[in-house]
Image 1 (cartoon, rainbow, N blue to C red):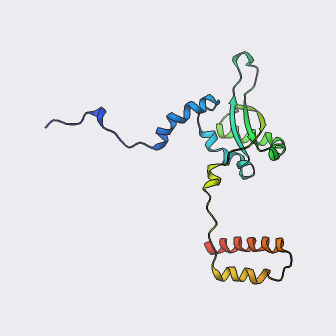
Image 2: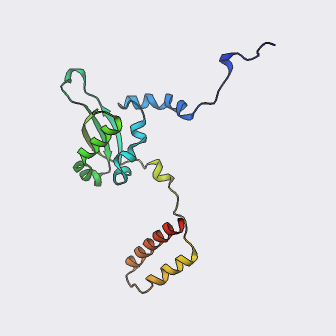
Image 3: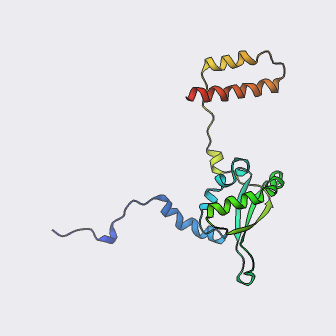
Length: 169
């Protein structure tokens, strides 16, 4: 019995990452990124303080003529209010980026102030899980004597967070 399918006609399931890579890699290459890995791991590299207010824009690699340069320049877009804080932590950010890359590829961090697109991870977050009615009543009872509205609301949020953590256990 002859085989009816040829080897080239057969389509196999492939990971979506393998398909997307061919689309994303040329875009990343234009901006100096060897791959999208640095962009994808940016939130973990800079931590929660800077994850929402920064984004890597481009890596500017030195030209061959200026081979005396030690490494590339990472250009980072930062919300205007956080630029000064990021500037003070430039050395730490460079260490984390180079540790992620596996070698000292980046020697300079250039900060560009401007609006930062919201992270997809920040948009994916859902509302916190509700707590039991009994816990909610207990929180209200504990803070009802507090006259200051902002303080009472802050303590209610804190109480909900504590009960949410305890009820998860």
